[in-house]
Length: 329
Ligand code: SAM
Image (cartoon, rainbow, N blue to C red):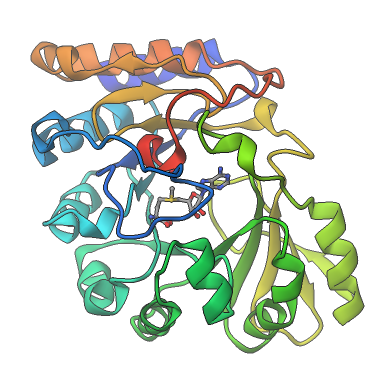
């Protein structure tokens, strides 16, 4: 039996009823948006460039994670496409045998210049965060960003042949006013619009907002026509999907607040500065940089430790110090 197989078997034995096979890697804590629910007033302290994991370290870590049974990887941030060379890194990760799904979460603002390169590099899927389809509300939520380049980005990923393409909108008060446009998008394009309940992450910003529940949005959406439950268009997450008759896309919900899915959570997160976290709602993390010196075996062991200490029960929400952009959303 190979080292990889031994580690993988241990991981599954330690987590009896679930396999933790999904790793989200933040490649930068920098972002070109200033989303008001993600960044506190006054901003956050960014890490020095030298404190970030290098591409070499990210690739080594991913290889070690694959040896423990990870087969799905998502690149996130901050805004991942602001890190120079992000497409090259994605190409290197796509080449790792054992990864069957390599995806990206982005705010879409730089996508039109990157979409075809990312496709050629081997990226499987893209999720674009668009919290509003009204230019005014979009600008307000993102601290002044323009919706136009993001919609161009969406168009370019569809043109490049990515599928499924998902659009994520955080459900904050006011989202009800955007439903007309989101419904139109999910009807007319092969796009999966997902409403994500806002989570109170980050002490300085988490308490400032309240989430709009899946139940409330579903009720409102039913006013647009019959919505039937459908299978996931593909992916590793806990979203539940619905479709309007004749629509090309779907509507999904990620109800992290009103319907916790801790028991089925299959993910770990690696922060851009090298901390491994097994729960968004807990500040426990392992600093992995010292383990690189011990090679793949040492890294795989630390990944297994994190997998095996991941809780099954619903956690008390503890906003913690870091915001989503610092952890990796
Ligand atoms: N910059 C990229 C983007 O905008 O998609 C990747 C990082 S961003 C932190 C990832 C996702 O996390 C975005 O969809 C964002 O809306 C979401 N997010 C940030 N803070 C959140 C919170 N407190 N609750 C729920 N989602 C949040």
